[in-house]
Amino acid sequence: MTELCDLSAAELAARIRNGEARAVDALDSALARVAAVDGRPGTLDPGDLTADDQAKVHAFITLTVERARAQAEAVDKKLAQGEIPGPLAGVPFTVKDIFVVEGTPSTASSRMLANFVAPYTATPVARMEAAGAVMLGKVNLDEFTYGSSNESSAFQPHPRNPWDTSRVVGGSSGGSAAAVAAGEGALSLGTDTAGSIRQPAAFCGVVGVKPTYGRVSRYGLIAFGSSLDCPGPLARDVTDAALMLNAIAGPDARDATAVTVPVPDYTAGIEDGVKGLRIGLSPDFFKLTYYNHESSEMEERPLPDDILAAVMQAADKLSDAGARIVENVPMPHTRYGIPAYFVISRVEAASNLHRFDGVKYGYRTADKVDDLRAMYRKTRGEAFGPQPKLRILMGMYVSAAQYSEQYYQQALKVRSLIRGDFDSVFDASGEHKLDALLTPTTPTTAFPIGDVYGDSVLMQYADQLTVTADHAGIPGLSLPGGLDAGGLPIGIQLLGPDFSEASLFRIARTYERETETAAWRSARPKVLG
Amino acid sequence: MADEKITPELFAHLVELAALELGPEEGEYIRKQLNNQLKAIEELVQVPLDPTTLPASHGVPYTPAISAELREDLHNPFPHPEAILKGAPKTEDGHFVVPDIPHEDLK
Image 1 (spheres, one colour):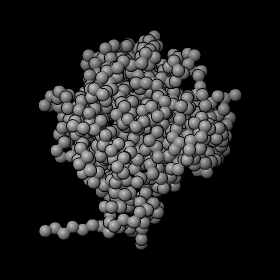
Image 2 (tube, rainbow over the protein chains, first blue to last red; image 1 turned 180 degrees about the vertical axis):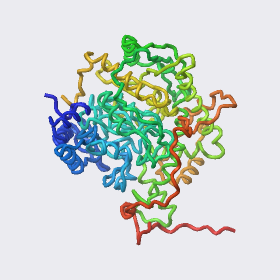
Image 3 (cartoon, one colour; image 1 turned 45 degrees about the vertical axis):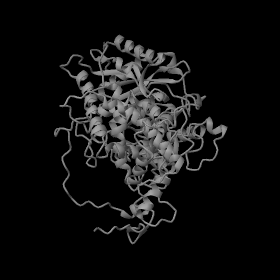
C-alpha cells in the first residue's frame, strides 16, 4: 500500500478533505520517512562523516515538529467542525531555510545567522499555511543560496542525492529537492536566482518552477540578488506544483515588486493538452560553454547524448500530442548568461550582505575588539564562508567607479540582449511566435560530491541553461524527462513569456501524461529501497 | 601572475573596503578564484553592443498597469520590538550596543 507521504499533494489533500485520512496521520507518515532516510540534521559542528551519514539524505536543518503537529491538529479540528480548511489542507511541506518563519531558526545555512530566530514570517510561507499546508521544518541550502550543489552550507552534513547518495543534490534549493524526492514532505518552497529551483529539481527527479519575477512575493526572503530572486514550488508532479503556485502567487503590499497581475487557477486548464501550441527548440541550448583554465579561452562542448535524447524525445511526445515543434530558434545571447550573472548577482549580493555586521542580529565575534570597524571585520571574517566572501569582493570590484562601465553597465546591457532574445521568439507577430521553448535544464546529471566544489567558475556554469530566464524574469519549469545511463534523473525545461505559467503547466502535464507508462517512471530514489 | 587583474595589493584594499578579515590561505584561495571569474567575465567585454542598447536593471517590464500603488507613507511600528531586540548580540535599555565608533578629526 502506498504510504501517505508518497501520495501527491493533490491526492493527500483530497483524502484528508474526504475524511479518508487525518492531517496528523499525514504528518506522522512524513516524520516516519524523515526518521528513516534523513539521518542527522545539518549542524555547525558535525564532526566526522560516518558511513551511515553517507547513506542518508540530510535534507533538514530544523524540524519543527510541535508547530507542525499543532497545525495538523487544527486542520483536523476544522474538518471535524465541517469547515473547509484550504486547498492544501494537511499537506506536509518544507521551507528552504532562506525564508524567515516567526519563532523558528532562520539560518540561510550560514554561521552568520545560525542563532537567528525570526520575529516574522515570509509571505509565501504564510500563504502556504493559510492554504492549510503543514510546515515540517526548514531545509538545507548553499550558504546564503550561493552555490549549485549544497556543499557550501555551513550546516553539515550537507544534503545528498536520494537517487545516489554519492552525488550532489544540486542547489541552491537542494534540501528542498531532496526532501520532495525522498517523500519528506510532498511540497517545498524554494528560490531561484540562476536556476536554484530548477537545477536541483532536475538532479533529484522532481518538478521545480521558477515563476515570473514578481509573481510571488519576496517578503521574508533573505535577499541574494534582489532583481533576480524568485520564490517558487518544488513538487513530485506538475499538478502539485500548480496547486502550490495557486497558494503562494499574488500581490503583496509588503513587496513592491510583487505585481498586481491576476492569479489564474493554474490547475484549471492543466489537462487541456498542447494542440496548436508552438514549442521551440534552440541549438543555443544544445551546446555548452566552459572556461578552460589552461588556455584561458571559453570552449564549447556538446550536450551529453542522453540529455539531448531526452529533450528530443520530449519534443516528439509533444508533437504527437498536437504541438507544433519549431526548430532552429536562435537564442544567440544564451552563452553570455553566466558572465553577466557573475557581475550582476555579485553586485546585488555585496549590497545585500552589508547588513550582516554583528549589530542588530546574528553572529558577533567573541574576540575583544577595539572599535566598531574591527568588530565588523572580525564578525564577517569569522561568520561568512568562502562563497559570501567571494561574492562580496567581486561585487565591490566590478561596481567600483573605475570598473563599473566596463563590467556592471556592460552586464546590464547584455541582460537587455538576453531579454531581447526571449521577447523576439515569444512575439506573437514575430517570426517564431512561440508559446514556449523546450530545453535541457542542466548540462549534466547530478555530479559526484567533491568533483566541482572549490572551483567557483565551473560550479557557476552548472546554471548556464537556467540563468537566462532569471536575467529575463520569465517563468521556467523543470520536470523529470527520464534517466541517464547511470540511473540518474534528467531534467527537461520549459521557458515561456512573462506570466505564462499556466501554459507551461499545461505543456508539462501533457508530457507527464504521454510518458505515464514509460519504464523510467516506475524507478524510485535508491534511499527508498 | 602577470595576467592577474586583482593583485595582492588591490585585493587587500577590497578586503578592507568589504569589512572582512581573511587568513592568508583563505585570502589567496579567494583572490585566485576572483581572477578566474574575471576571465569568464571578460567574455562580456567582447559582446558587440548597439549604442542604443539600454541597461536592464530587471527583466520584466514594470508598467503602471501591473505595479502595485505606492503605500501611504504611514508610521507602522513593528508590534513586538522585543522580539527584534532579542536577536541582537548586545542590547541595553532597548538600544543596540556596539564597541567604540572610531572618530577621525576633519581638518
